[in-house]
Image 1: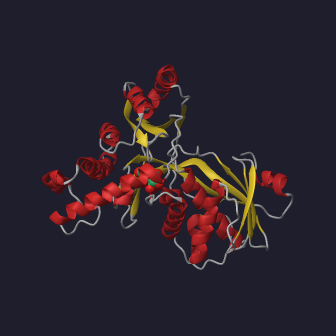
Image 2: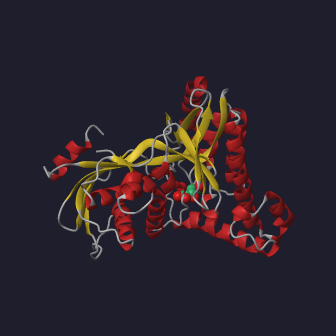
Image 3: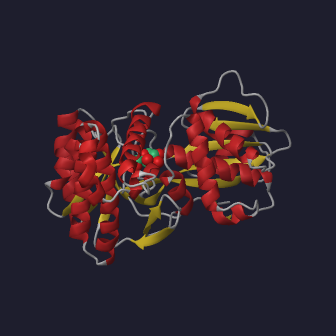
Length: 397
Ligand code: GLA
C-alpha cells in the first residue's frame, strides 16, 4: 500500500493532485441475518479497506485500474454501459447511477482501486468498495473539499452518512444481492475501538466500547470462497419474509421478524412450515442475543458475551443452515482452546471467516491449535489475524 498516489502516477501518468478515499471492511460480532429483518447487529469496521486514488478530469469518463485484477476498465457517467463490463466495474457503475438519480452532479475521474479486504470472505469487501466508490465520486464532483470523515463530504451534497449507506445498499441490490443495511452502514459509521449496535429499522445506533485490554477479536479466514450470489442468500431472505407474513395473522403489528417476540414465536411456531420455522427461530433468537450482548458488554461480562457468540454460531449452523464443514471445524478447534470466550462464523456464511473473542494470552495458543489441525483436516490454508476496530470511511488525502 506503500503510496497509492505514486501508484496512480505509474498507471495514469502525472495527472495532477491525487486524492485518496477509503472505505473499510467490517467484521460482525453478533447479529447475523437480522438486518434485513429489521433487527439488530453489532459490527465493527476493520483496518482492512478498499482505497481509491483518483484525479478528477473534465470528461464524463470514469476510468479505473484494478490492482487486484490488473485490469483497466471504463464507463461513462450518464452514458450507455460498455459492451463488456467486468464484474468489479459493476459496483462503481451502480453507485454512480444511484448518486446521479439523487441529483448529485457527477464528474469523471481516473483512479487506481486497491483493497486488502479479502473478497468473498464475509468481511464485506463489496460494501467497502461501494462506499469508497461513493466517496471517490463525491470528491471528483467537488475537488475543493479537503480530507475528512465521510460525514463532512456527504454534508457538502446535503446528504447524510445514513443516506449514503442506503444509496450504497441499493447499488448492491442492483448488482445482485438483496443485502441488508449492516455492511454499508458500518463502513460509513465505524469508530476506532468500538463496535456499533445498530437498529436496522430506524438506523439509530450507539457505539459500544470494546474491552481491548481484556479480550481480542481474532478473525480466521477458512479459505473457502463461496460466491454470495443471489441464490442462497436471497432464498433465506424470502423465507424470513414468508415467516413474518404467516405470523402476522396472530399479531397484526408484525411487519418483519423483528416484531416477533420469542413468546409469540413459541406460541405459534407450529403454524410455520419446518424450514421457515427454523429460519425464523434463528432470527428471533439472534435479535435477543444482540440485546443480551449489549448488556453483557456493559457489565463487563465477557464470558456471557462469549456464550452468546457460541449460541449464535450454533443457531446459524442448525437453524439457518449457512455454515459449512470448514467453518464448523474452525469454531470447534477454537472453542477447545483455554481462554477462548466464544467463536462463530461471521457475515453471510457459505464459507468465509470466523470471529473469535479471546483472552489476550490465548491468541497464540489459538493460532497454534488452528495451524495444527485445520490445514490437515480441511485441505485449506487459514489466515489468522487480530483486528482492532477502525474508524469509518473517509477522504484521507
Ligand atoms: C451480508 C449482507 C448483510 C447481512 C449479512 C448477514 O453481509 O450484506 O446485509 O445480511 O450478510 O448478517
